[in-house]
Image (cartoon, rainbow, N blue to C red; front, side):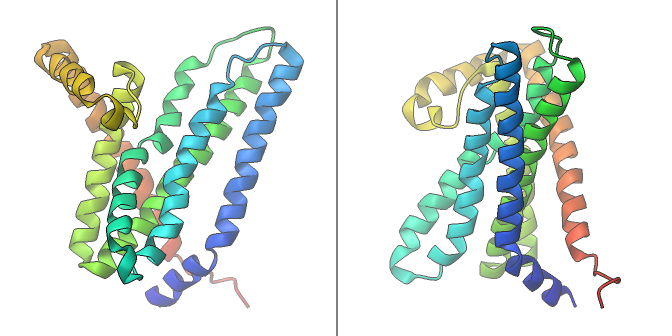
Length: 228
Protein backbone atom coordinates (compact mmCIF):
# COMPACT_ATOMS: atom_id res chain seq x y z
CA UNK A 1 0.00 0.00 0.00
CA UNK A 2 2.73 2.48 0.99
CA UNK A 3 4.73 1.76 -2.17
CA UNK A 4 1.68 2.31 -4.36
CA UNK A 5 0.90 5.60 -2.61
CA UNK A 6 4.49 6.80 -3.05
CA UNK A 7 4.38 5.74 -6.66
CA UNK A 8 1.18 7.72 -7.11
CA UNK A 9 2.90 10.76 -5.56
CA UNK A 10 5.83 10.52 -7.99
CA UNK A 11 3.41 10.03 -10.86
CA UNK A 12 1.62 13.23 -9.84
CA UNK A 13 4.85 15.22 -9.69
CA UNK A 14 4.05 17.21 -12.84
CA UNK A 15 0.58 17.97 -11.52
CA UNK A 16 2.17 19.25 -8.30
CA UNK A 17 4.61 21.33 -10.33
CA UNK A 18 1.75 22.84 -12.34
CA UNK A 19 -0.13 23.65 -9.14
CA UNK A 20 2.93 25.33 -7.63
CA UNK A 21 3.45 27.26 -10.87
CA UNK A 22 -0.15 28.49 -10.70
CA UNK A 23 0.35 29.42 -7.05
CA UNK A 24 3.48 31.35 -8.01
CA UNK A 25 1.63 33.16 -10.81
CA UNK A 26 -1.18 34.03 -8.41
CA UNK A 27 1.24 35.50 -5.85
CA UNK A 28 3.14 37.38 -8.56
CA UNK A 29 -0.13 38.64 -10.02
CA UNK A 30 -1.12 40.03 -6.62
CA UNK A 31 2.19 41.87 -6.45
CA UNK A 32 1.74 43.47 -9.87
CA UNK A 33 -1.85 44.38 -8.97
CA UNK A 34 -0.55 46.05 -5.84
CA UNK A 35 2.02 48.00 -7.87
CA UNK A 36 -0.76 49.10 -10.26
CA UNK A 37 -3.07 50.20 -7.42
CA UNK A 38 -0.46 51.92 -5.27
CA UNK A 39 2.17 53.05 -7.77
CA UNK A 40 4.85 51.65 -5.43
CA UNK A 41 6.90 48.45 -5.70
CA UNK A 42 7.51 47.86 -1.99
CA UNK A 43 7.29 44.07 -2.25
CA UNK A 44 8.78 43.50 -5.67
CA UNK A 45 11.69 41.57 -4.12
CA UNK A 46 9.20 38.86 -3.08
CA UNK A 47 9.30 37.68 -6.69
CA UNK A 48 13.08 37.27 -6.48
CA UNK A 49 12.76 35.36 -3.19
CA UNK A 50 10.22 33.05 -4.81
CA UNK A 51 12.54 32.51 -7.79
CA UNK A 52 15.28 31.41 -5.37
CA UNK A 53 12.81 28.99 -3.76
CA UNK A 54 12.19 27.37 -7.15
CA UNK A 55 15.89 26.50 -7.59
CA UNK A 56 16.02 23.61 -5.06
CA UNK A 57 12.63 22.37 -6.30
CA UNK A 58 13.79 22.15 -9.91
CA UNK A 59 17.05 20.53 -8.82
CA UNK A 60 15.11 17.91 -6.87
CA UNK A 61 13.30 16.94 -10.08
CA UNK A 62 16.58 16.44 -11.92
CA UNK A 63 18.72 14.81 -9.22
CA UNK A 64 17.05 11.35 -9.14
CA UNK A 65 17.65 11.06 -12.88
CA UNK A 66 21.28 12.22 -12.72
CA UNK A 67 22.14 9.69 -9.99
CA UNK A 68 21.04 6.86 -12.29
CA UNK A 69 23.50 7.89 -15.00
CA UNK A 70 26.98 6.66 -14.04
CA UNK A 71 28.95 9.29 -15.92
CA UNK A 72 26.96 12.05 -14.19
CA UNK A 73 27.67 10.93 -10.61
CA UNK A 74 30.10 13.76 -9.82
CA UNK A 75 27.71 16.33 -11.29
CA UNK A 76 24.87 14.78 -9.29
CA UNK A 77 26.73 15.17 -5.99
CA UNK A 78 27.63 18.75 -6.89
CA UNK A 79 23.97 19.53 -7.65
CA UNK A 80 22.96 17.91 -4.36
CA UNK A 81 25.31 20.31 -2.58
CA UNK A 82 23.82 23.25 -4.50
CA UNK A 83 20.34 22.01 -3.56
CA UNK A 84 21.36 21.86 0.12
CA UNK A 85 22.77 25.40 0.07
CA UNK A 86 19.75 26.91 -1.69
CA UNK A 87 17.06 25.01 0.24
CA UNK A 88 16.81 27.60 3.08
CA UNK A 89 15.53 30.12 0.51
CA UNK A 90 12.23 28.22 0.46
CA UNK A 91 11.19 28.60 4.14
CA UNK A 92 12.98 31.97 4.35
CA UNK A 93 9.99 33.61 2.64
CA UNK A 94 8.00 32.99 5.84
CA UNK A 95 9.96 35.76 7.54
CA UNK A 96 8.71 38.28 4.98
CA UNK A 97 5.66 38.54 7.24
CA UNK A 98 7.85 40.87 9.30
CA UNK A 99 7.30 43.48 6.56
CA UNK A 100 3.54 43.51 7.09
CA UNK A 101 2.30 47.00 7.87
CA UNK A 102 -0.12 49.40 6.27
CA UNK A 103 1.37 51.24 3.27
CA UNK A 104 0.12 53.49 0.45
CA UNK A 105 -3.55 53.16 1.47
CA UNK A 106 -3.51 49.49 0.49
CA UNK A 107 -5.73 47.46 2.88
CA UNK A 108 -3.75 45.46 5.39
CA UNK A 109 -5.75 42.34 4.50
CA UNK A 110 -4.57 42.62 0.90
CA UNK A 111 -0.90 42.77 1.87
CA UNK A 112 -1.42 39.89 4.32
CA UNK A 113 -2.93 37.77 1.56
CA UNK A 114 -0.09 38.73 -0.79
CA UNK A 115 2.66 37.80 1.67
CA UNK A 116 0.92 34.57 2.68
CA UNK A 117 0.63 33.58 -0.99
CA UNK A 118 4.38 33.95 -1.47
CA UNK A 119 5.16 32.27 1.88
CA UNK A 120 2.88 29.27 1.28
CA UNK A 121 4.26 28.68 -2.21
CA UNK A 122 7.86 28.94 -1.04
CA UNK A 123 7.27 26.59 1.89
CA UNK A 124 5.58 23.98 -0.32
CA UNK A 125 8.41 24.20 -2.85
CA UNK A 126 10.85 23.47 -0.03
CA UNK A 127 8.88 20.64 1.57
CA UNK A 128 8.17 18.81 -1.68
CA UNK A 129 11.77 19.08 -2.87
CA UNK A 130 12.94 17.73 0.51
CA UNK A 131 10.50 14.83 0.14
CA UNK A 132 12.11 13.98 -3.18
CA UNK A 133 15.68 14.24 -1.88
CA UNK A 134 14.93 12.28 1.30
CA UNK A 135 13.41 9.55 -0.84
CA UNK A 136 16.53 9.58 -3.04
CA UNK A 137 18.84 9.30 0.00
CA UNK A 138 16.71 6.49 1.45
CA UNK A 139 16.89 4.47 -1.77
CA UNK A 140 20.65 4.86 -1.99
CA UNK A 141 21.29 4.14 1.72
CA UNK A 142 18.50 3.34 4.18
CA UNK A 143 15.47 4.87 5.92
CA UNK A 144 17.41 6.09 8.98
CA UNK A 145 20.00 7.92 6.86
CA UNK A 146 17.19 9.52 4.88
CA UNK A 147 15.60 10.88 8.05
CA UNK A 148 18.94 12.08 9.44
CA UNK A 149 19.54 13.96 6.20
CA UNK A 150 16.04 15.49 6.32
CA UNK A 151 16.42 16.64 9.94
CA UNK A 152 19.87 18.13 9.24
CA UNK A 153 18.40 19.97 6.26
CA UNK A 154 15.54 21.38 8.36
CA UNK A 155 17.85 22.49 11.18
CA UNK A 156 20.49 24.05 8.92
CA UNK A 157 17.65 25.58 6.91
CA UNK A 158 16.44 27.26 10.09
CA UNK A 159 19.97 28.53 10.73
CA UNK A 160 20.01 29.76 7.13
CA UNK A 161 16.82 31.73 7.80
CA UNK A 162 18.56 33.49 10.69
CA UNK A 163 21.67 34.16 8.62
CA UNK A 164 19.62 35.55 5.75
CA UNK A 165 17.27 37.66 7.84
CA UNK A 166 19.58 39.06 10.52
CA UNK A 167 23.17 38.50 9.37
CA UNK A 168 22.08 39.51 5.83
CA UNK A 169 23.98 36.91 3.80
CA UNK A 170 22.74 34.91 0.84
CA UNK A 171 23.32 31.32 -0.30
CA UNK A 172 25.92 32.34 -2.89
CA UNK A 173 27.99 34.17 -0.22
CA UNK A 174 29.25 30.72 0.85
CA UNK A 175 31.17 30.66 -2.42
CA UNK A 176 31.61 34.34 -3.29
CA UNK A 177 32.45 35.66 0.18
CA UNK A 178 33.18 32.75 2.54
CA UNK A 179 35.77 34.56 4.70
CA UNK A 180 33.45 37.46 5.54
CA UNK A 181 30.56 35.06 6.15
CA UNK A 182 32.64 32.94 8.52
CA UNK A 183 34.06 35.92 10.44
CA UNK A 184 30.59 37.47 10.80
CA UNK A 185 29.13 34.23 12.14
CA UNK A 186 32.02 33.88 14.60
CA UNK A 187 31.40 37.45 15.80
CA UNK A 188 27.71 36.70 16.29
CA UNK A 189 28.48 33.51 18.15
CA UNK A 190 30.97 35.20 20.47
CA UNK A 191 28.35 37.74 21.58
CA UNK A 192 26.17 36.15 24.29
CA UNK A 193 22.89 37.84 23.28
CA UNK A 194 23.37 37.23 19.57
CA UNK A 195 24.41 33.62 20.23
CA UNK A 196 21.29 32.98 22.30
CA UNK A 197 19.07 34.62 19.70
CA UNK A 198 20.62 32.56 16.92
CA UNK A 199 20.30 29.28 18.84
CA UNK A 200 16.74 29.87 20.07
CA UNK A 201 15.51 31.07 16.66
CA UNK A 202 17.16 28.11 14.92
CA UNK A 203 15.53 25.72 17.41
CA UNK A 204 12.12 27.37 17.17
CA UNK A 205 12.04 27.45 13.37
CA UNK A 206 13.59 24.00 13.20
CA UNK A 207 10.76 22.50 15.28
CA UNK A 208 8.16 24.41 13.25
CA UNK A 209 9.59 23.20 9.95
CA UNK A 210 9.94 19.63 11.21
CA UNK A 211 6.29 19.51 12.33
CA UNK A 212 5.16 21.02 9.03
CA UNK A 213 7.27 18.60 7.02
CA UNK A 214 6.08 15.63 9.07
CA UNK A 215 2.49 16.73 8.44
CA UNK A 216 3.09 16.69 4.68
CA UNK A 217 4.69 13.23 4.96
CA UNK A 218 1.65 11.88 6.81
CA UNK A 219 -0.82 13.50 4.40
CA UNK A 220 0.89 11.77 1.47
CA UNK A 221 0.38 8.40 3.18
CA UNK A 222 -3.37 8.92 3.63
CA UNK A 223 -5.19 6.74 1.06
CA UNK A 224 -8.04 8.18 -0.94
CA UNK A 225 -10.90 6.22 0.64
CA UNK A 226 -13.44 8.04 -1.49
CA UNK A 227 -11.88 6.89 -4.75
CA UNK A 228 -14.17 4.68 -6.87
